[in-house]
Length: 280
Image (cartoon, rainbow, N blue to C red):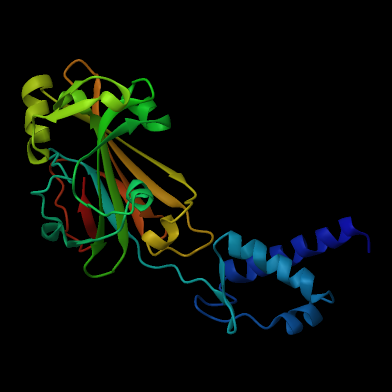
């Protein structure tokens, strides 16, 4: 066989194995036969089998436990993150207690803190706003902002989520100078951010959106995610002033195999079915 035909064979085997998994020929958590058996079954080589399995691992259907074998990846129960309703609490305020929604804080260093070698969770850090985050707020890159973040762990499922927020620093502080000579005099305490923005720019309104991406860096470890084949669910709540100007956004990163997002009206009863784990 030529290389091209060899490539076609592993794809065919991947299709056959995928069909077996989707049709429950192999049950969630069940081990697949060993590479030698599959190579004999499909009259091919073990490297070809290995390549087909790697394809399904990347798709999130299989998982490989070194020294134990290849297993059908179980699908855990998903819990809801409800969007909407009348309440818009500051989830990253130092006074907000996630325990009332069944969560607890866990200490995980942010990327900036890993670089600096220190961990100060649930605090407000003044830093420049770059890239897509500046685009969300409609400002030029390098504008000073207030960054806050937290990691929560669900008390029952032990699933983790990452919450972070950005708002423009000059909305809550006085900034003088530039570059290394810049001085920031904080005028508003973090627990009063939302009340201050309501007074100065209200009545406020919010837009919530959902998208996905593949995780990278330490995200897999920080959120206790499967290392391959799990997308990241991102829920973004954007605060707008009375004239429609972006003021702040809060984003939630959650493992896509553990959570799903749903829209909720102010009349919905959160938690009535026992599956709601967070109301945004």
